[in-house]
Each structure stands twice: as structure tokens, then as C-alpha cells.
Image 1 (cartoon, helix red, strand yellow):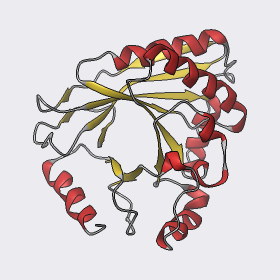
Image 2: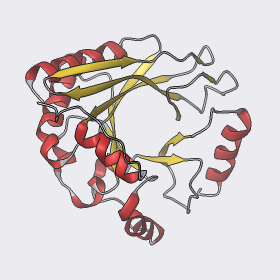
Image 3: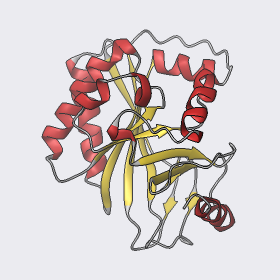
Image 4: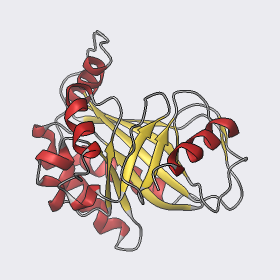
Length: 236
């Protein structure tokens, strides 16, 4: 799975038999009592038979601040903490459900670095999303690697997979990499089917047989895609 973020991407070189595309469909910013939607504006070109996963990114003042700290960026933002109310929940679910209805979309993925105080809202959102989508369309979420090791709340979510994000991990990097290098797996079963990686961070051998979601900070090229496929063969 190649993540295609908000930039022009021409992925027509892909072999749709073994590579799919998880594309950023929209970003939702929750602030005050409102939800501001930023739809995808950049073109995405894929092979005619490519399978697509629609990704919706959810951001709050807390998640934006956490991301900024991770990248050591000091930015003054005037938005107030999100109310996380019923209106914001319904607006977010409606947007994700709309993304699920786009052509050739076979699954949806929610990307939300929910803080402890935001998890009840996140769970309600996923419960309502599952109710609206029904059981047939898979729901994926991105997951901080620490969620897969230290927390039990993922097991209560109505999702099909949680993708452990093994890049930009910050303070927990050594603990997670040591755990995986020693042959120990994630404690949460939902985290054992896939991995999230980035092309600009070195990979140690990781568990084989996982679905790989790979992010590139630069536009994807055929050479970059072949490099990913070549490196991951050594894990099998």
C-alpha cells in the first residue's frame, strides 16, 4: 500500500496485482464547535485496475500541537480546543462515508492521533461510522505504536485493522524497535496484520507477512516503489 498524500501523484506505473494506493481524500480540522473540511485538491493518477483506500485525516488543536512538538516546530495557532460535540462527530462521519463511496475504493482509513481525552469521541465516531458503512467495507485506522503495546482501548473499536506507525515515533523509538528486533510482536491483535513505514527512515528487519503501508516525503516514482519492494523481500 503506497500512501499518496496531498500533492500531485502519478502512480500509473504500479502493478495493481500487488500494490494498492491509500490516498488522502480529505482532512477534517475540529476546532471550537465546528469542523472545517479540506478536500483533496491535488491530482491522483493510478492504473485502471488499482484498488484504493480512502484516507481521512482528523486534526484537533491537541493533535496538531503534538505533531508540531514531534517535528520541533513552534507555530502559534489561534484555534481553541475542539468541543468534540455531536455535530463534529456527525460531520466527520459523513465525510468519511462519502470518501468510502468514491470509485474503486475498497476500504477507508482514519488517521487521527487521538489523545487520551479524545479517545471516547474517537470511539463514538468509529461506532457510528461502522453503523453507516455496514460490515462489508473494511475500516482501518493508523495507530501510534504505543497504542499497540501499552493500551487496551483498541480492542473495543469496531475496526478491521490498526496500522502501527513505525516512523516519526519520537521518544518511544528504541523501545518499539528493540521489541520487534527481539522477535516479540505487538500485544494488540489488531496491530499484527500491517505496518506503517516511511522511505526516509532506515528499516530494521520487521515481521514478515504483513500488509505494508509506505509513506514517501517525496512524490512517488517507479524507482522508489521498486526500492521498497526489493528491500522488503529480505524479510521473508
